[in-house]
Image 1 (cartoon, rainbow, N blue to C red):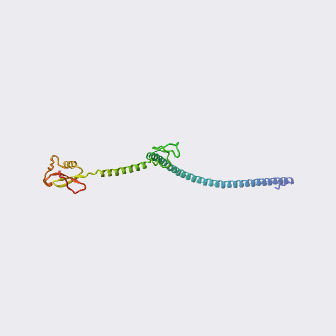
Image 2 (cartoon, one colour):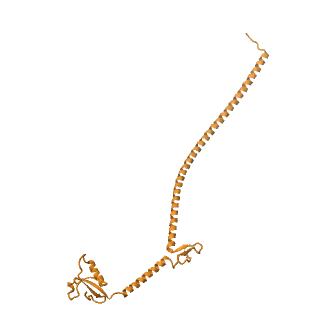
Length: 242
């Protein structure tokens, strides 16, 4: 069966075809725009991912650096604590040493004032130190007249003088005779006086023994138990037998 298409019908079909082609072209353009939009979005997302990855890497590196700084700071804090403890011990030892030095200074100053015979009077020039004996101000040295060394030297000189005087007096008072103690004629000991000789013989005799002194007769000295002779200092040994 042959169907006849009229010119009006053909024109309508062409219009429909043109509209269909326009719609296809419009859909294709929208699709292309959408695809381009999606491509740009993907590119932006990729760039954002790369930037995010870079930022994450930078953050991780910064975090590691911060960890290292924290560790270094903790080490420094430990070292600082150790240094502070050492400094505290050193300060304490220095304070103890300062107290000891202050005590030593006070002790030596007291000893100085005691030995130098000085006292302190801040109202007196030049330095406030005065002699405790003459009350006169002194300079950097103690009073030369009343300093203990000066006094001691004076005392020593005086002792030497007195010893010389005593030696001269003893020499002047030297006795003319000494007492020689004999035992059966043998020389026993020498004494200043007869009384000293008698006392010496009595002191060395056994307890309960009667001391027998030789009589003043003509018997030989060797037959006399104890005897005492006067011996002149300037003459030969001998003298009166008693």
